[in-house]
Image (cartoon, rainbow, N blue to C red; front, side, top):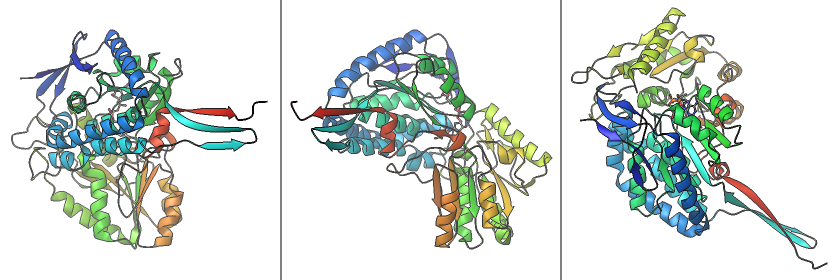
Length: 480
Ligand code: NAD
């Protein structure tokens, strides 16, 4: 039977919503939950409760705040398997990925920010007859609006620095993935987080718009598409809300002729097929030097054809479902367009109906070669398991073509030449650049975009800047 999912704020599940949204399990297509869409009256109530809780929280010492958040992190780590099963229900990704990487990356951030806030300091200044110091102060009530690919990670990457800094937080998960967030907050409260500090408002863009316009919310952080990012900025203008944006990408991965072929081929595949390709920083434009193109393509084709698509909970499966029927159709449409525009379909490209999961939203991992920079599949974010392979001849050419996009989230390169590695990494226009690896984001490294992939950073001490103001205090030391 489908469960009922409500908003969760002020320490309790809340009714009073104005309608429901059907949540389907991507692996079967069955309705597994009915989600109540929060009203603006409920948002008002949540903001008032969050604002009340935030006053005490901001006065709590950083040592105590940090310790509470670390306890919450450890409680969430203890619930890793439970949360991973919920994340699979939400997203349809394979359990092995959820439990080993996607879900633990959330509590890892909470632990990092809990520890970091205890030693976070401002600056000190000294003048004739005076001294000064700066410190970071919380903004008040902050909000996060999430995409559907990493619901646990998005919930905690946004809320962890906000809470550590002394803010209260309101999370609006994507309407496509409403399941895991409420449980995250329950576990944090069981571990000692005061009620009202972490709140979940369920709903779609309508309540998302209300969040942006709400005068009681000081800041909104979005993870979503570029078009949504532009709307969020406009909607937040009237209340002069601070905005940070984690948006889409079309990252390049450059495989130079001297690279480790096995490692480069395996990494390129992971950078396209992990979470069924629904990863913002995925390297979907794989630039391969002409001298190794045949070798790399042969390796990737063979490995891709060995992948099993199907039941996300099965240990024998390497790729799960896409998020929805509509999204699957959109991704398959891109494959068709690629072929029409002249790309060669090396492998994949078709919908699949695994036994026992015939109603799920599955497709084969797909490699397209012979791609050119002006093709739709090379220019637009597909957000599915579709890799475009592009051939290049020189380093300068690869850099220029890699940068010829309005996106700038991730970029990567494979080479054994140390000088080339630094030279090229320095010229790639992206917030995150990986050398001889891809998509690794430890909590102490910043993550975020350049160009139209957004601004602001998650993870690392830089994230504190997104959830605080600077207060500069000048103290006169002479009595004249
Ligand atoms: P989306 O932009 O459609 O929706 C994102 C969120 O915004 C959802 O919660 C949605 O309800 C809300 N929303 C939509 N319109 C709104 C409005 N006008 N006002 C307020 N809220 C609104 O994105 P999606 O389809 O959920 O996710 C896929 C996109 O997210 C891709 O472009 C992907 O690259 C991006 N993404 C980026 C990152 C990153 O860290 N940079 C991470 C994951 C996903």
